[in-house]
Length: 377
Length: 130
Image (cartoon, rainbow over all chains, first blue to last red; front, side, top):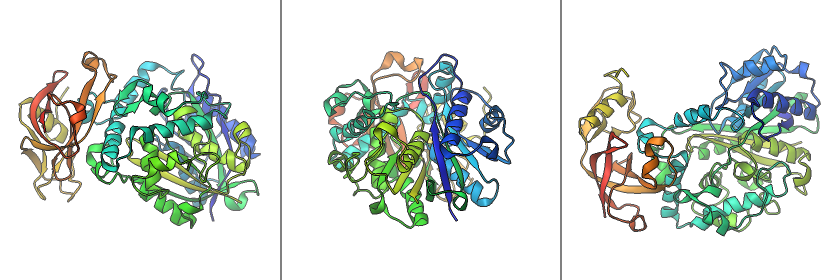
């Protein structure tokens, strides 16, 4: 028995003064249910991510009440960037374990429309005090990993920049992406340095977002459903200082999460037809690609430049534009995968619907990792 | 704010404020651990103490920060942050105050640490490289 995703929905991401995270969570939930052909009253499980911008004692309780639901099973998950993929794992475990039958997995945040002072406080709490006292940005922590990668592999800043160029090309076709104008490697390297070697165009956008999927057991799902063939999760550290491997081999816990997911699905990297990879910064994608076994260690930059991740290439990836060009929230990697596999992606639909996909969420500073393997029926 | 004398982080901050170049060390297996915590990740012992370290360290990585994350750092940008190995497997993040240009930095380069201050707080800093 597997879990299956029946449909996916997203909220509008255009900021509006005073717009709440709950409002976007409701909008994406209703859109996902409509896409799935499931009545709201059938939902008996709700799992949500957390909001950085808006305080809730239990976000899933706030959302359930806003939707008029009294679910059997409800959870609020905080796994930083990995949350979007992780709530799908939790929903799958809940329907397979019998805690509920039909679960909504939802993540929304009003990171632009919400109160900026709350955002600053929330982000300041995200690094270890022994790191923070030096004055690093979150970008700096990724930059330290990126610089070590460049030192070790001989990859170049152009290799890093090529990730942003690739995903912008995909965003250009996505009507809901925030940035759609094509960019070059020179544009990326010419954008303001944030924390060397990372430039502004190599950093995730900050936008409002909401996304949701409907999850049930595969024996209750129809031909249009997307099966969760496998999943895996792993956590290596909170502070990068406690995981020297990041700076020696560059191996992250995504090597473990993807291995577990491949094993459960009974497939390997060569069987993938699409990938949606958490892309908070350009080096994140290169390290994760190597952990997934998509290329040899140190070869990810060359693979991106050869078009591996292009929508017309062997492994179309971040076909919505990702965090780098489309919008915030790792839940969009999930909703995008489901839409491409169900053929509902609209203007940026791939020419042939992928049969298998890897979806990956990364949390913290490459610490929390969640991999999903999805399959069409 | 009250300091719990048994809290590993509080003990390290206090020692640094007293100008002592040290980290948490496990009394069971002898490994250094940073940032400190209640349990040794290597041997799972809860028996730890502060351990003085030598100023010699090795450069692992670096980043020049061009945008301050908080107001207390705003008048210093850009500033250089390094990641150094103080012993096998123990990393420290520290500001760099050397005359060496960043373009001359190499992974594996020897560096010297000393107690200094960052935004008014006592911290180990990298005082020389190469």
